Image (cartoon, rainbow, N blue to C red):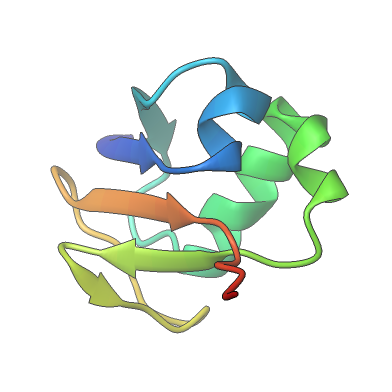
Length: 81
């Protein structure tokens, strides 16, 4: 198992109830695995149409493999005006 530091921004902070937490994932987990774990642990995130994932301050694709001590940010859709 590896620890992933997770940061939440915008509405995701309200939905999860915190702005950061540590999640445990299996070694060689992908961003997709991370998203699935989030949906399982925080079903209220399903209310969002979509959200972006950034790993170590760079936007990440679903097939990116995470490493221990990575920082993953959950970024809600941004609406312009």
